[in-house]
Image 1 (cartoon, rainbow, N blue to C red):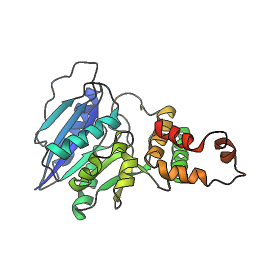
Image 2: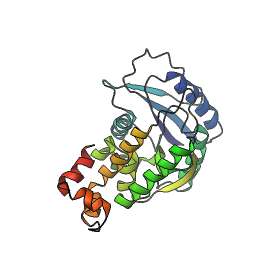
Image 3: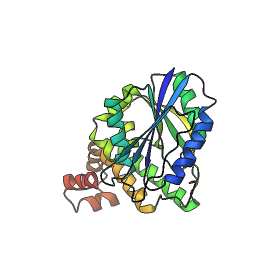
Length: 259
């Protein structure tokens, strides 16, 4: 029997977590010869934590409380480091707790990784739920990150990772700022499944233009040496050259990394 951990960061949105656990319970009921348990990272929520009832198909649930609010990227990084050292499992599923990572796709991730058990699987976004303008900006973000990093990073947190890859990622500093960038850089051979970004269970999406910009910069920071090289080789007649020529090149690259 293969053991799957599901890592879920939560900040105040316990109502969504309970709904997600119910949906996960229903989905995994049809998956045979697999054991599922959950690790929930409480990102220093400001409201009281309700009693969490564990659905019957989830073998157990562990709640870890962060001392300070760090954001979901750092919660995932903490969870990955914790699990790499403290738990017995075969695969780790990383997903958000608000419904945008659709629980019905867990079955697709599990089927894919069991068919090729030594390769981690990322949920490649083929459709998003936001408006047309934001979807345009998201495509622009992918183009810009590809230009500067040379990598097509078309997935987010939603993934199913082997224990071996978890151990590789656990000691990487870049994991604390960008999960997808770190996976793309340090896990050289990935499988993919198509994924449709769902709607939040309750309330509007928390993704904003500012968060998208920070997300892009965080990915570029993971590949800062590649970004530095590409900037240093920009055509002297280009607009970007005129912009970056006003700054010390090293500091410009370092500024991106810092942000």
